Amino acid sequence: MSYPYQVTIFRAEQLQKLRNVKIHSPSIIQIITGSKRLYWKESTLDLSHSKWLLCEASESLSFENLPQKGKFLSRMFSFHCLPTEAMLELSESVDDGEERPILDSDKALQDTLNALFSFDQQTMSQETQTFWLMGLYQQLAERGVLHHLFATANTSFSQKLSRYLSHSPGEDHTLELVAEHFAMSRATMIRKLKQEGTQYREVLAEVRLNHALYLMQNGYYNVTMLAQLCGYQSEGRFSQRFKGKFGLTPSDYMKTVSIN
Image 1 (tube, rainbow, N blue to C red):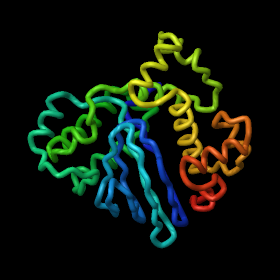
Image 2 (tube, rainbow, N blue to C red):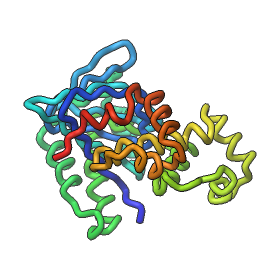
Image 3 (cartoon, rainbow, N blue to C red):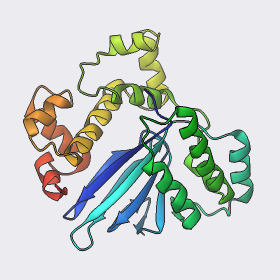
Image 4 (tube, rainbow, N blue to C red):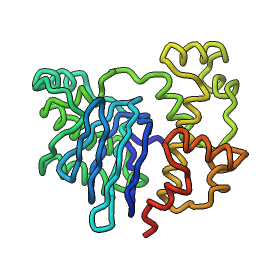
């Protein structure tokens, strides 16, 4: 079942540094405890509980998660359905013109996001979930930031590919079979991805390595098992790719993660 949005929890008990974390869908990151130091363009931005990070699709983030009193906790809300054209037009009309990825939230926004977090998505219809999500979109439009979150009205092919691969990151996923799923030839898929400035193996690696972060956040601490679950035959190859992408080894990342 495909949901209109997804929530992922991230925790840390020690300073957690990550670089090049690819965002596959438009997302909001909400800090619950601790703070996040974001390296954005030429600036360093600090986020606390009252500030949300707005991430458009295909953005790569480099940041530090900073625990306070031994804990860091954040929620990432990833959105899989588009707002209406009217909402995007409203957002653009009230935009203050300041380019920034951070939104100062208020009680109304916090209440809506907390409601989305609290829902049992397995027992609630997609239509009801979408109804609530559109309420959040309307609030963001009234603040003039919704069109920054959805900078491109159309979902790119690489985003669709990422979403498909993320349902089963550990499977073999040969280029030929995936192209067949999208009803196109191998050459057509290669060409479409090249037009978007990427390659199939890059998209697959990003999905698999992001999945590794998710697994470690959920209690998987055996590197050999992690490698297998993320589609890597070699533990050494997995660790090498992980460090090359994020700047630290899987074992180093595990040491930062809360295990409570």
